[in-house]
Length: 124
Image (cartoon, rainbow, N blue to C red; front, side, top):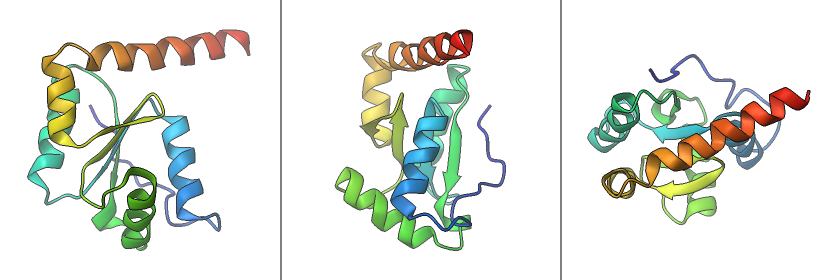
C-alpha cells in the first residue's frame, strides 16, 4: 500500500528542508521512517489497514538521512521517527497517529487531502 520507491530525497541541490516540504506537498500522507523502527511499522500498518496510500521515506536508506532527520527536528521539535505528515500538516509520531485513528479523526484528515487534490486536478 505504501510507496517505498526510491526517493529523489538527498539527490537534489536544494536544502533538506525544501526537499522535505516538497515531498509533503506532493503526497497526502508522508511517513519519515527507519526500516528497523517498530513504531514506524506500527504507523505504516495503521494507514495500510485503512487502505490509504502513503509515501514512506526511509531515512536510514538515504545517504544524507541524518541531515534530513536534523531538518525534521527543526520542523517538528523532535528527531524521533516516525515523523508523520497528513495533508501537509505534522500530526506527530506513531502513538499520536494511533490516537487520532482511535478517535476517528485520522481518516477525515486523509480524505480532506484527497478531495483537495481531486479539485485541483479538475481545475487543470
